[in-house]
Image (cartoon, rainbow, N blue to C red; front, side):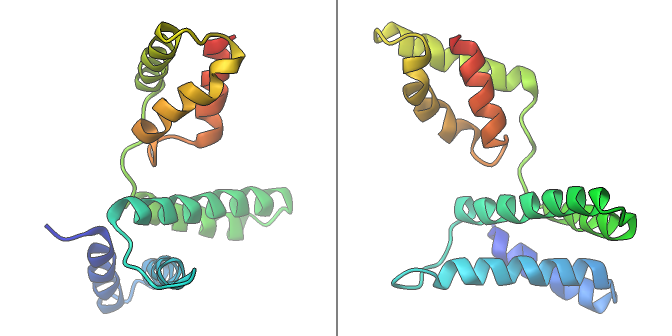
Length: 153
């Protein structure tokens, strides 16, 4: 089984051969972000697929924010380009959790934390500690935190 970075590189090669400038440009930016992450810090390292998903999520978030900014600035052509890049990046991300699945994960985590004696808003950290690994890369962190907060209220 090939890892995610190899898949992105193979898709980049295909996009270049197909003369798909949007896809090839987007994948080049993604690979550049991956390389920057690999060489950042004191020593270089090879990212595993979970780390790659984190980088892809960061790049996807940038595209969402840019599209919103371009919409606010009345630049729909640039916003459309950002959304097209976002779609390309999202193809490499795991499927997002549905609201029902997220609610089930949160409710089981709340029940587990409540069984250990911690309840209310003070249990937020403990619940997030249980929920975060299960939803990593599949749900927006701020949305998860808001859902946990409302479940504890």
